[in-house]
Length: 195
Length: 387
Figure (cartoon, rainbow over the protein chains, first blue to last red):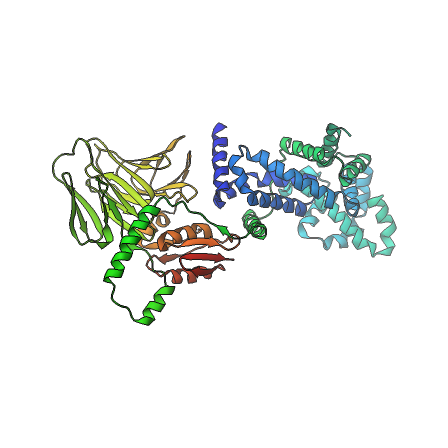
C-alpha cells in the first residue's frame, strides 16, 4: 500500500515536471473511476466523457501544483467538484433537461402493470426502435422484450447500469418524438410512457 | 438546508433513488447558487466515498491526446512565450571549449569565399567528436584539437589518443591515492574513452565521466552525468559501479548498458543490453535483465520491454525519435546542435517516429520534423518552435 502511494508521489512529481507518459499512467489509473462518477451525476455517457476530459485537461494545465500533492485522488476530486457542480447547474438540472430527468427517475420505479403496458406497445413502437442506434436498440429490446433488469442488461452488454438506464430513457424520448408524428397512437403512447 | 441534508439529496440523485419532490428541492439549491462552497464540499465528499464499478467506453488513447492538445492550447492562450530553461551545469566547460575552439578556428581557418560565408550563417552543423579532459592536477586538454599519440602521463598510466578515442594503459600497481581524470563533453560533442581495465565508454553531448586513471584492487567505480553507454570488461574480482548525481548507483556484473542521467530529462534511465546490472535508488533497488530499462527517481520502476535500440541509437550516430514527444526531441536537438529551444506559444502535443543521422545539419533535421506539423524559426542559436 505504501509502495503504491510512493510510486504515485513519484508519478505526481514527474507529471509536475511535464512528463506526459507519467500523466498517461495516472489517467489510465483514474479515468474509469472518474467517468463512472461523472456518469452518476450526469446520467449521460456523452456528458460524463466531456466531464472526465475537462477534469483531466484542467489538471494538466495546472500540473505544476502536483509537485506538492500527496494523493492524486484527493486532488482529482477537488478539481472534479467544481466541474461537476457547474455541469449540474448549466446542463443537468435546468428546465430544458427536465423531461429527461423526469423520465429517467420515473423509469426506476416501473410497476409490473406498467411493464406489461410497455410490452403491449411493442408493435406500435417497433418502427421507432428500428431508427435507434444499435446499442440503444439492444438495451430497449433486452429490457422490454426479454424483461431483463438494468443490472442484467449491464452485465450482458458489458456496460454500466447507468448507461443501460440512459439508453433506455433516450429510447423512450426518441420513441415519443417519433410517435409524435403519428397522430393515431399519440394519445395512448403518451399515456403509457409519460403519464 | 444543512450540508448533510444537501449531501443526502445529491447522493440520492447519483444513485437514482431521488423522489420528484427531492429533485425539485435539489434543483432549486443548485440553480439558485445558494451556498456554493457547501455544495462543492458535498459533491467532493460523495466522490471520495463512491467507487462505482465499470469502465469508460471511450477510446482512452484518443481522449488522452485530445486532453494534452486542448490543455496546451489553453496554456498558450493565457501565457506568452515559454522559455524552456535547461540546467547548464556544463556551461563553464562548454565556454572553455568554445573559447579555445573559436581561437583555433580564427587562427587556422582559410579565408572562405564570400558565398560560403553567407551560407554558413544559416547552417548549424551537427555535433562531432570532441571533449575536454580534466587531469588530476586540474589542467585541461581539449581532445578534438589533439593529434594521435600519448597526450599525458598520469602517475603510472599513459593517456593516449587514438582515432578519436582516449586510451589508458598502465604499468605497475595502482598508487595508494588514485588520480582522477574527468572527461567532459559540451553540447555538440561526444567522445569515447577506453578505461584502464578495458571498459569502453561512449559519452554523449553535455555529459561527463569521472574515473581513476588506474582502478584500485577490489573495485571499479566511476561517476557519470548526462548520458553514457558502457561496455564493461568482465572482472569477477572487481565489480564495476556507476554513480550518478541523483544518488542512484548501478552495479555491474560484466555487461553493456546505457545510462541517461541528464538533469533536464524527467527521470534517470538505465537500459541494459547484455549481462546483468543492479540499480540502486534512494528507496529501493532492482536487478535488470537484458532488454529491460530502469526508470529511476527516488524509486526504481522497471520497463521489461525497453526499446534498447532507441536507448543506444546516439552511440551509433543516429537519432531515434520513435514515440518521442516534441519536448524530448527538442532536448536532444538542443544538446547536439547546441541551440537554445524556445516555445513561441504552447508546446504542441506531437509524437514522432523514425530515425535520422546525427551527422545531418540542423536545417535538415528541422525539415524532417516539420513533416509532423510543427514549425521552426531560427534566430542565431535560438530555435523557436511554433505550432
